[in-house]
Image 1 (spheres, one colour):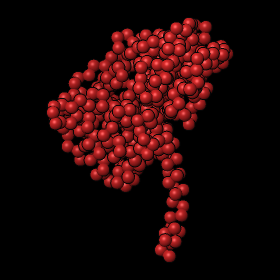
Image 2 (cartoon, helix red, strand yellow):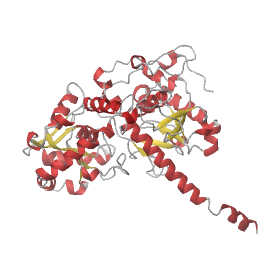
Image 3 (spheres, rainbow, N blue to C red):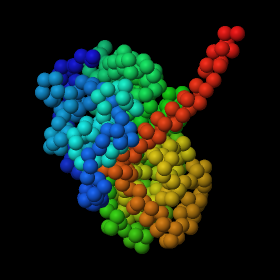
Image 4 (cartoon, one colour):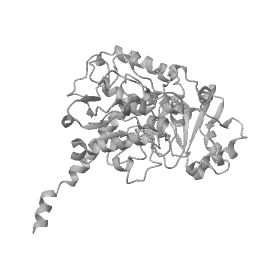
Amino acid sequence: MLPTYPSDDLKVQTLKPRDSDWKVSNSSQKRSSVEQKNKKMNRVCDPTRALLKVFMYDLPPEFHFGLLGWKGSVNQTWPEVGNPSRIPRYPGGLNLQHSIEYWLTLDLLSSNTGKAGQPCTAIRVQNSSQADIIFVPFFSSLSYNRHSKIQGEGQVSVNKMLQDRLVHFLKGRKEWKRSGGKNHLIVAHHPNSLVDARRDLASAMLILADFGRYPVELANIKKDIIAPYRHLVGTIPSAESPPYDERPMLVYFQGAIYRKDGGIIRQELYYLLKDEKDVHFTFGSIGGNGVNQASQGMSMSKFCLNIAGDTPSSNRLFDAIVSHCVPVIISDEIELPFEDVLDYSEFSLFVRGTDAIKKGYLLKFLRSIKRKEWTKMWERLKEITHHFEYQYPSQSGDAVNMIWQEVARKKSSMQFNSHRKNRYNRSQRLVKTN
């Protein structure tokens, strides 16, 4: 059992997210309304029918909602999820894009509330021996973003302290010892989250944004999951999405231009494209009116560039998707969410970095995509946008639901490989004794 810290030790500041950060997008609200009317969804989930049975550790609040400033009553571990007004809101801005563990935790907490209409995908079980996967509810991205600063000389940050305690806790659990951690699920979506503990916990299934800052022996596509960023711009309702002729801008990019590592390509493209007509390629951030500017710019553009930066992925891809602006992915090392069930070539364009920086190549390629071909990708974008929506309560086919399905598929694949390795165990033992 983990001892809890007094709240003063955490020095958690009160967080005041914007209302717009919390609200479900209009398109999701409309879709939810339709689904709630669907007679197929009027039954409470039967645990025996759930795709995935999940055991979740009751970690003390300082590992999860306590990082949001939440304080429950004595011995209360979780907020009351049945009342949305009592659920601590996640902070906005750049914090929000890495909020994946927050939505997954809420989904598990509400899976036992008996509410009709929720997807019967993942359900929380109270006995770990009955579980398909064991979820570790540590808000690692928020811990990194808010609590990495060292408080005083010779001290360690709250972020590192929590990671150390988490490793100690998990290594002592029978559930971890039984599988060496392979049946555990840990979210570390921010590329710098869990940096002190990742070597100790790498045997677990990780939910990441990409593999850019992980050596292959710690994280790889065979055992881990790539989850979408939570988009920052608002979702354009399908019926209101501007078509080809109402998007006067050919190409849109707004963001940090001077990046290190693989992001040097942004700088090269900037000098190639900045003076071209029908191209918006400028520096920008989410500060001030940045999100609204990006939302307006993407909705008025036919193609939105997603260029590798410090890491292979960025939130920009998902902002483009919900803006129905055809993504142009220039990131050779990128891994994409749900690619085993989604064919990104149906709604995105891929350009190798070495080709993109050839003078004239990129614009010639994009201008070769005519209205009919572009419209086909635009229509497909409108069909798949809901797969990238994080919301509470979760809905069928949204990002939360898609992640749980991906976990189930990954778990099945890992079991398959494990069973194949066991084929000759008995006969080989006999060989070794002779």
